[in-house]
View 1 (spheres, helix red, strand yellow):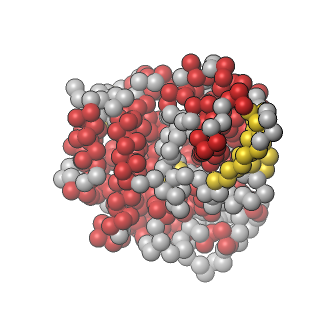
View 2 (cartoon, one colour):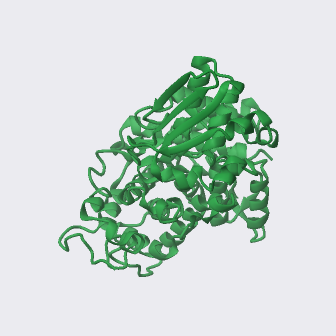
View 3 (tube, one colour):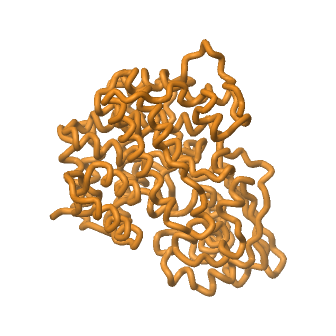
Length: 470
């Protein structure tokens, strides 16, 4: 085990984050950052509504309901659960379709983790929409920066960063809403060191549903830690840098003093929430660029499936074990969930259908012989120009039977900070998702409410509006 590389005189990361969170006010947050935060919350809420009729949602609700009822609302559902059970359930709904946002430098599903925590806590404490928004932004900033320290390496070691790193952001969000002081917020982070889940990526081997639990479980871990801190429980002190701190334990000698600085550099001046990418498709972020390449090539050159002799994709090295292999599983995804993590299937849908929406996850699409024939023609290699994790690039070359060759590259994936979806595009995505569960008039009411979240006098009322009408 390495010795802590950070100098002993440097402020501890946990203390710096605690001070930032404790002192953060709405007035200190620039208007564009507030607007971005509300758009991300809107996006998450729409996805949660779309998830409500899926098998995984019904199964999850049946499971958490065995622990008893409570007063906390569930997005798009009529059930009321105990506080932490509602956070877990809402996290599952937001992340369940893998359509939710991602902080790309850390590979972190940040809103799916922090928003359910902020929503339930603010409603339970009967605070305002403004309080909810500030606590959400505080948690996003902390979780994003902590995930950036790892530089994508947690994924390669078999961890899903969301369940691990987001728990610390959730602890700070919950602590902010509980009114904890800086010392208590540091304690909350220290307790989280023992409550954060290992979040294994074993789900990727058989399209298990467990990944869907990770964001909500991060919220559960964070709320638990904040409650312990408020009660005077003693937590670890050197949370992140210590000999048995988070980063040395998970990354060993791979983490450096320079990496640690990413957790606090320009805190309160540079807002990482602006680096959070909204997904244009319900697939893993690592496939977005190649899917867009397929759509562009098919449209620009009128390529039909029967014209295709071969397709070659260039992807970041880190993408290969996540969306390219095991090869047979990616070529023949058995479920819609498995299809979301198949580069080959995404590319084929892009070429054959010119799109990839929730309909492409249905059984009819998974067994479409035209799509499957194209899937078998997709090969892949490491992209030598990759800038992962800054950008999730992709390049595609299609060769036709008559010898023509077409190439298109997306160096910056759509939805990333340099190519963000517009407010109008996010609103349209929200409406399309929410209308799968509720009438248009109700979806429009929720949209208007969330885009003026800071003006809502009661977070309890907000949570009630997001739940299913009784």
